[in-house]
Length: 204
Image (cartoon, rainbow, N blue to C red; front, side):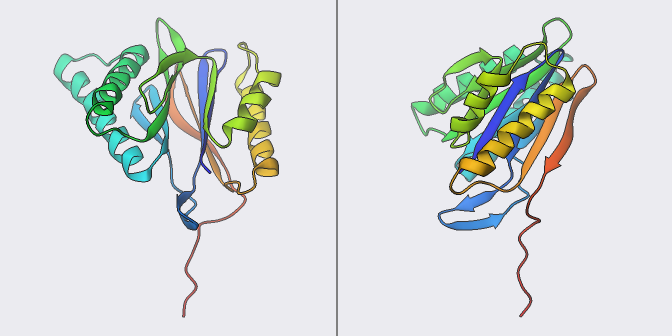
């Protein structure tokens, strides 16, 4: 029951993801951070099979870092998104990754941007996007309330509306979410929305 969604506002991009690590009917932990920082001004939020998600996002992160190390300049968000799409497309014909990605970034020339990349290597630049069962509710909520000139406070209020809708309407809703933001000051964690603390094993 994964939920990953994001949007672009006035000079920033926000991504939010559930923090549940689930296998079959078991919840292993509920503080799993599914949003990785690619570099100082890029975030990659992923959903999908846990192994594919972790391995592929780390692979992208290390290659983005390698490019900057070799060339002395970082990839733009668009270039990083196209690299990611190319790697997914290559893997699709060999050993495909079951992973869906929202990539958010901020560039001096282009400003904030958000890219939608799915498991069959479809790439789109979007103003708002979502993956997982939560997308049924977050996309409709964002369609109703989203504006491209939103302030950070308005965008966070919209993110909270999406989280509330997911928690209210999804049968097995993830309890906790992490929210991260990227703007001219860089990529950083903004807040956690927790309704359940980390799963702990009772002492025997």
